[in-house]
Image (cartoon, rainbow, N blue to C red):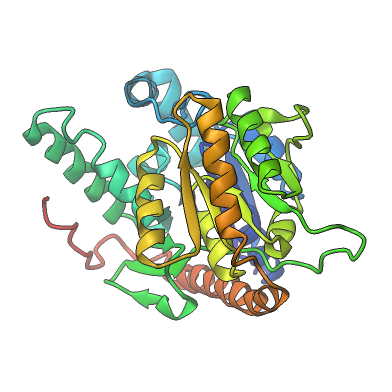
Length: 385
């Protein structure tokens, strides 16, 4: 019988959606029936570009950002509080989810949707729920109230979130620094896997090599986009620019389903330091220019890229277009001393295939255990911080 899986991908970050479409196609190829949910109309449209039909669960829950992708913590806290405590929001979604997942063997939560965090800690539901998340995102979530609330309250919040996460059937933590060989069982319900990366096609011979730029839709500041484009021109680089927040502006494209293929063949990648972009750079051996903002998990990712000696530079927008243009031009010129090569692309395909295979195998291997009773021995949550 064809196994049924429900995959909920939050639309706050396009990396979640990219991972979802990649894994959904892999799971369907392996014979699973996968139904997809997301959390915004824009996320639904993004998935449609990759031939994934997704239903929108709720439009009320979303992390809040300004037009330069700086996280708005207070606005996010208000949004989440309204979602969790207003009965027409999370409770309504739980009722809807209860019907959707009733005959599913696995329910994947990518990443940390509050309704599935709650359901994953409740008897009867938790044995089927799998939380998928980046390690840096979990650390950022549990530290959300550090230095913002009294220490006792901040620690209580972290313990509750850790308990919710660790009560589920399984947790899969991914990271751009992991390798396929890192598919290890950290505990009875925790696994680590490398962030999955698409297996790219050949670049059309007629298409000239260009730096591949991607900025997620939280980037909407036109001055930033123009300064970035100008800095790349100053470095003598042609560019292929993708960003939903800049669609139709000065040569920018909103969505490009082939962007990863372009990036894997590009001499240089430009993006924010998300797990997906850093994974593409690492797997396909591309230098990467990181556009950093005030987003906790991405700040952590950029710091770890430095420790891993990934070929990269970091630029930060501070409102001065001329300074940002200068920083971009200088950083791009430095990175082009070590441009991506065809050999890196060829080697990267095998690494990408190993990553995708590891994910599909791990998720499908969880299915036979999805019907274990809740009397099964559970792991302890992480020790209090």
